[in-house]
Length: 571
Image 1 (cartoon, helix red, strand yellow):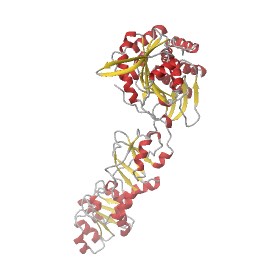
Image 2 (image 1 turned 120 degrees about the vertical axis):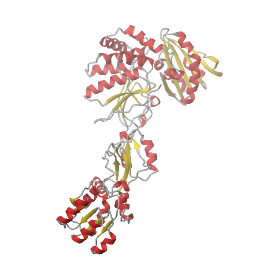
Image 3 (image 1 turned 180 degrees about the vertical axis):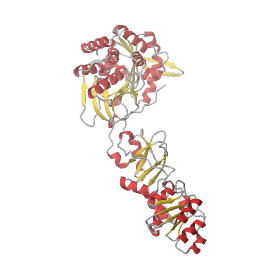
Image 4 (image 1 turned 90 degrees about the vertical axis):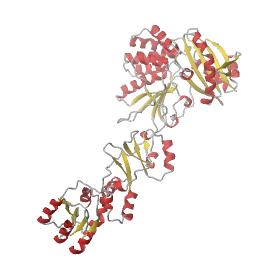
């Protein structure tokens, strides 16, 4: 079963992802791990993160388990995501915050949107400058303070008042707001239980409000209440607060105490997650007129605000490519990533970078051999575990120094690393190859994709899967199954041709399977031999293809791809 994609860790430094090609082999994964350790040691950091573009095959799993190393971070693409953008990490506010406080925070922070969050950081709503403006223009209801369940402490803060008596840690839930402008006799007809009364220093008016059950009186212009009024208010639980504002100003300001929860947007909020790609959110933003969009985690926690302006400075992920340099083999989104380095031993492909990069490509049998040389050049000591990983990659890519791609440098590096790792390289290699040869429990898809790469030659787009084994019978038994799946892969991968190398490690030869239009002609021109046409029934379906025995051919990179590419460009 395929593993779920892992999340890229973010710390104070911007991460650099070191990754191999899709359908990774042992060199691809071991080179990523070993090179990340070298870069982190050289730079005294932990920002270089080894990654993989797929699940480890049986051989690689054996290597990782043998040397007790966790599989690298699993990625399915390196597209630019919200997490790569410097969006505003503005804090969330309480939904009980007053409109006045919200406006002041927006003005001081030069923002037009504030997110309301609960105690657990979960996004509850958004209040915008437009919402606040509408609250002033559209409110004509004298009972809106209670309708909005306004906290009395909001009123105290908004009017910059002093509390004389009463409990402001409660909300106004009934009543209306009125100004005691008439004489006390007239006010008896207007004041009702739970009202908030704005008045002056007239004791008669204060008593009238108290007698009629008002919840709060607001005394203006800095006047005070008599000891008798205070005592009666305390007995009845009425709040008395004193403000320096006059009655007109207090009446204008009091609606600014309404909590933002009354006006904020709570439903249908358009938000993004850090894993969302820039391509996806650009399309969404183009259809909406909002200036700011909240960024939330998968569990709904608020993280920050993203605007269209933030997208202008979006930077792609920083990536180092190992063991490949062709866009067709790279993770999706690589064309927009910031490629810092390429460490490889294959032919030069079609990759284009946004800027100059450190590029190291050597005609060696294994990328991990190059990484080993870089350890030596930088005088960095190799620990036994890292040595074991690089040794395993070299064994795999050179078939224990038997492959024509193997050089003296590869063999020197492999044996030196084996000594550091403390293993018998010949014995270990047979164990590793045996683990890779055990294909009984694998599906056709898993076998086909465990070491699969795509290539382009002229107008021809083709793919090559390689299956290596010590067991010839096992290889031959795979022929009908992989013929069938190779035909499926033509459509899945949008290929013109698909090839499968069934490589016998002991005999040092390959049975090549081929499907696709003119695949037989390409084999004939590339290897000067007549491929055999085969047809057989597979689960009721007739499968046709071609086979060819390639003696002394074990290397896809050096012995198969060059002639196929050369003659493919001429077709």
